[in-house]
Image 1 (cartoon, rainbow, N blue to C red):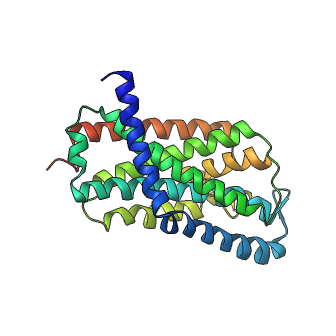
Image 2: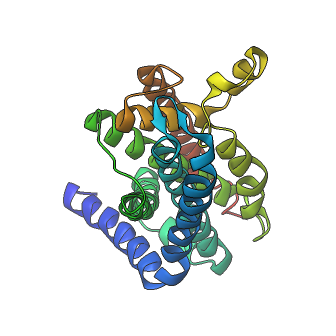
Length: 257
């Protein structure tokens, strides 16, 4: 395919994905905004006023970066896993597979669509947070790079989950039993410095801890881990998942029966 044809194929997938979640915005954009507003009110205002400061900042300011990242992670993942699995279920994915579109373009299109929703939700949550606290960006490049890479990473994870899923129940297993616990234990609501030494070490195994702290460093300038190590780990995870996803597409894993 020519570069123009590749770009057209990529753009078509992305536009379809964006139109899909914007068309049903009450189901895709509104619920995360409402959920995060409740977090701001309950944890930030009500509980945070009793906790006081954490990491040198008031509690509301401390948890805002983590809540933004949590919204980005869940939305990026959910968009791709639901969209790609729906195409599998409806068997419309076969039309895309028999076309001359390369696998990497298919993957890039779905990942970019997931990132569009994830980053869009992140922007909405950020604007909502301004009603509760003031944000002063410490390191804009680090903040932007971390949130973009994290969104891409979990969009890839959603793609792999969709390929492996055989029924609708399968697409909820990973978010419920893996993604949600790791996110809540990833330093969104606390600094791991508060934990005993053993549990600090256990927390360092959690990959989401690095993403949340890398983003928090970009906004507040504080982090429980080295932000550059965080970026390095995200890039490694992206590379691994991208290779796995492409191999699965090449073999038709879960889509060619």
